[in-house]
Length: 159
Image (cartoon, rainbow, N blue to C red; front, side, top):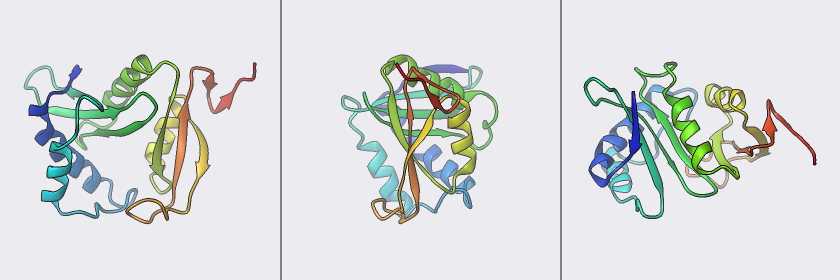
C-alpha cells in the first residue's frame, strides 16, 4: 500500500469510493441523500488548498483503497473501499491525520455506525457529544469523537 497526498485528478475516484463505501455500509450508515452526479460534483469541487486529502493505493496496480480528508481541527472523511476493509488501510490513514494534526482533532460519526465507532475508539478517540441528528442532512443521530495526544483508551488524563 502506498499513501500520498491527493491531487485534483484523484477527486473523481475519491467520489466513486465514497459512494461505494457508503452503499456497502447500508444499515450502519444512512443512505446518501444526494444523487450520484451531485456527489461527484461536490467531491470534484473540493478545495485542496483548504482541505488536506490523502489517498491509499494498492502498490501493485494503483487501485484506490481509501482516502482521508481533514482540516487542522476536523477529520471530515475517512473511507475505505469495501474490498480493503480490515487490512490496515483505515489505521494507516488515521495515522496520517494524527501525524499531521498532532494537537488533536474531532470528527462526526453516525451513532448507528457501530463499526466506525469501535474503530475510532480502538485508536484512541473518545466520544464527546451526542446529537439527535437534527443538524445533519440525513437527520440521523450522530456523535462527535475527539483525538488528542493525551487521550488513551477512552480516558483523558488530567494534568
